[in-house]
Length: 258
Image (cartoon, rainbow, N blue to C red; front, side):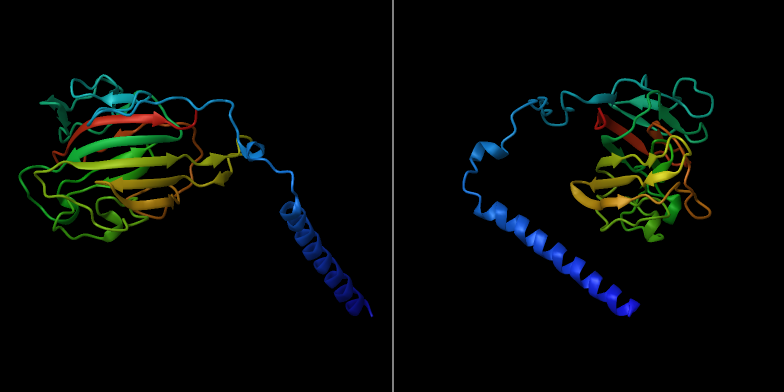
């Protein structure tokens, strides 16, 4: 008797919910006094951003490198001036000096960055044109000469290192510049207990081709071991010294969490 009654009551609730849903939809369909302006929103007006001409950044961008100096960056070792070499509108990793990072920290952002592999091709796999772009200092988008250079696919150019391989290999030959456009949403944490509420998410376009499509970042991108969840706030953009003379230019960022 109890089971039958429970089943009957459950079915009644289910049927009522379907009826209510259809009744609500029917009300909207038969409503005759809708006007176009009822679903138009005018205020507040959207901010105006002027797109850059050619390779110039948009008007609301934070320019992290304009070809002249590394004043927006510092050494990861000791916080001193970034030690990498600037010449001809780009800068190059100085092997053995350690990574560099932005002086400013960021949350959600759109990042544009161009990079080029060493012009003298040497080594293979992970030993060829290796560097990395670390989002908030923790999550690496791999930089690697992956042009005719096979390696593990979650470690090739455009990968979220050791996690998510790129959808395709969009590399150009080494004498050409590579372009990354990265749209990043930071993870959300409970500020009271540090628990992860929502994973970080990233979309990456490599030379205009989507290689990461709203990819969930599982945690830190370590060389050894699985990803780890670490509570953190805003963080820097960091570039890796992996012992290869990778070059960078035209770096700008737009904050998306204002």
